Length: 119
Image 1: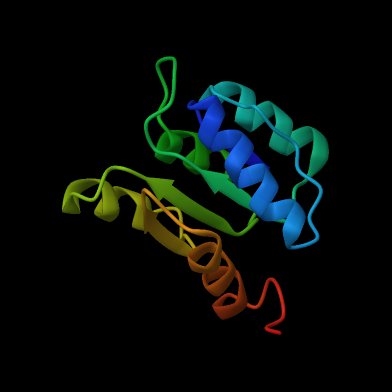
Image 2: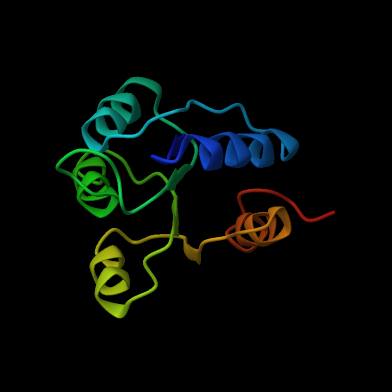
């Protein structure tokens, strides 16, 4: 599941995930919608931006998702400051990647987490 309010980046991450063999549930731009979708589809992984449209950011959305799921989450964000990273730690994230990211950076993160196998 991809939660990213920049639709161009959303499409880019979708293509990355499809190259890695994942089907994506996407074009989610609101935290509340992400929570509802996570309940509905029980994703294997969530790529989550921190700054989202609406009144809930990605960390708040993940705190709500954590109430019913231990799905791995990788934050992909432009927020490299320590305050966001400390808040994100409450969600037990798999990785915290700073935009812009390349395909191999995402793939390496997924390999290290044991979500995909290395070549």
